[in-house]
Length: 587
Image 1: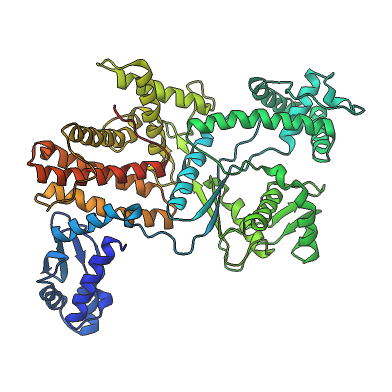
Image 2: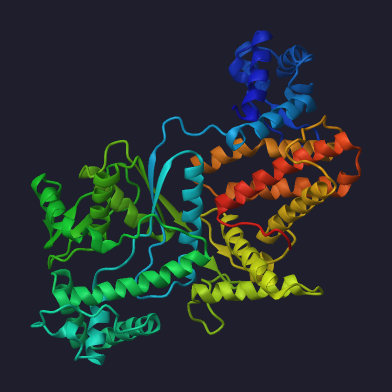
């Protein structure tokens, strides 16, 4: 099903052609002066030089061709040559009726579905999730859902930090505390215990303690590096401990991501490509891509057109150790072999821009990816407190993610129970749903690359451009539909009726923009476009609601309004699902 703007533009293009002008001049856009018209065309201005005619004359010729248009109710040529257009309500009604009947509201899914891998999340094992992990999870989850809705095969990979020195530090500290553990007996031949020798709480305390010691005690750090070496070279006891660390950490991570309604298809980490690195390094050497520079193995990625310094991509340090670059490149190689993706999208802090530029260039230069494989860096900005600095606890530390969510949940619970009696269980469930909407919408309504202020008071408000406001609108529509059914109405039998007032037409026009908006959100990898759309749609509905006694109309008109509201609700619920949250039945 074509987008409404395409149909409107086609009508305008045909009029330009009928008037003797280039149809390409008939591009129509949403009006930037809604007080004057709904859509506009500036093609006559562009055609003035080509046809050596005053633009107003061209516009007048085109307007005359559209006098009997079924798409436009009026087209007016105004100085110096604009075409101001109003859309025919009958055309809008027919378009929305098709949206109601078509799968996914007539959205044109991908004709050639792609395989897309989205790399997001990126937490380190043995560390709790904190607010710094919030944006990657929220943005990545939404991008994944948008791509899937457009008909693509999408694989979400958490890409855990589960290898390297941090593992050696944990093992070293465990050995200091419990030297008699069987894992440290190199002569042990039996099976290792199935239960880990620590809890998640203990594990989360062990790592920062070990990290602090390594910065002050050189001998301690050397022992940690030796433990890392033993782990990576397959010492059985160390591998068994590492498996415990992974199991305990991943179980806790899944619990916290579940609270965010974030799901990953792959729970792979840096360790999964460890055995691939030697072969990849040999390949890069053999093919002449990599060379030694001050003892390190590097690949030159600078290009003649660069306007900034792009350092070489280091593959191995001078001591032969691998780096993040190495594991990221090996991961790309693994993904190409296992999934043959058309695109890989990395949702990471925008301050990693240069790093990913190096990695992507290296992957292309060394032919780890096909020429047409898309490598896309979706860099996000910082989540800041009201002081404009990165969000912290009141004590100045980095806030744990679960504590932030608890704080928002409590705030929403207070607002929901304020001045009214609500059953405790229902209030808690509703508060949880609304709090998640507040957090996710508060984040996603901003363009991903921009920093933003995390303002609990504003994000939890039921007024303005907020998640709770969107949910309140949805709940209001649900209430109206429920009352209609209680009056004996059948939601399956209702059909749209003629549009009779301005607020109804405004709502219809917002609903009709769904397909245009979603295609743009996908193509630009921009969830904030969905937020902007549902805010406009909610405003249009609420204006219509306040100006119209919906359930007091005569039966046919009432059924028409209900059909419109039902479609509006379906679209809003699809949109919030794409953003990663859902609406309660009541608020």
